[in-house]
Image (cartoon, rainbow over the protein chains, first blue to last red):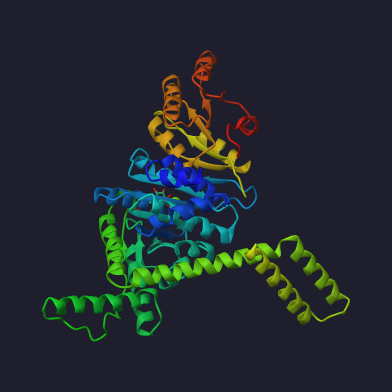
Length: 355
Length: 133
Ligand SMILES: Nc1nc2c(ncn2[C@@H]2O[C@H](COP(=O)(O)OP(=O)(O)OP(=O)(O)O)[C@@H](O)[C@H]2O)c(=O)[nH]1
Ligand SMILES: [Mg+2]
């Protein structure tokens, strides 16, 4: 079943959809399929779109899909919505805005609910992205609400992150602008038909400039330096005169764009910037550098998740119970108990790995 | 492994009201299901492709315009074309009693007319899933 499924997902969207269901459920059977697909991954440009609730992420995604289709690209979307913490159910509404693409064979859209598994969500999202990548979609877009750390973790598996803001959010905008330093590559002020959009653009630019002048370590400045060096090198190879930048590209800031997603205004420029960012990553060593960092981070998280899983198994549970009792009865002190439990659990973990 | 019932709530046809569909969607969510809502005025092709990509267990359609005798069987036909026979399909909305046998013959598992308690629909889904959720 699984090997065949792996071969089939290229031309059978139903198999792809089934595989994503296995990923959502974290079904162990998915692993064989994902393994078989591994060689086919790594080609897609992964784009994260994040921002506050209702900022227009889905509307924007719909227009970006249209623009990328016009430019001949196959596009997949993973739209992530939170589950209700009480019932575990969810209404996944992002797709409504993208229904016009439902019959386009070059577009695949999948809604994922967070299902309460916080750490697991970024794993499921990353695996889903890899499945879509293997299925030969040129661009894979992840839409997620950017509020908490777990959502920020999700867009880590993106090569290019678009942060969406809107006018009139008050203090929220501070947090979002701080976020651009950590995770944003392109800043998009949507609902530009509303008052105050230009001000958000100005404030965002000012904030980024201040950060750079203060020597802050931003996500983008390393890339811009590498791009500058690459450009200079290319120009020299062609024997052209180069207008030297004394700062070596270090003072460049990411694009801050205005869009009216509902009307599609500004979307073509946004797509230009998204593709330009990808080109910058590919021209330099940064695409690989990003992906290396992200893969390391994913592996680290998987180990942490597995360790937490071991802590919940019966053996570890009884060790914890015994240690707690020993501490309460003053048979041992807290720190000695901790050291003993840790040794026991690591030994159990190693046995599990070698099994 | 966490397994959730996934439902596509769809509004085929041209009528412009989705209050009922939204009430149903919220009731499904509150029953712990994951609901993908398509919005208004969807063609059978759009509904079936969305159901395929979302890999849902259930398609729940609501229609008020009166075009159910055409649109519901068309959805069934497309699902069969794509070998999606294991999807449970139910319908709702303003549907005259005399149309119900024909729709069931076309493969709609059950028709819920206005006034049906959402709990009844939820029970029906849980008892009639075609694949193990
Ligand atoms: N005025 C105005 N409204 C917009 C614009 N873009 C989107 N909207 C509206 O904003 C609302 C939210 O749009 P969505 O695209 O669903 O926003 P979202 O960020 O995906 O929302 P969530 O996924 O729920 O967080 C809708 O009513 C859109 O029609 C815009 O450029 N201007
Ligand atoms: Mg959305």
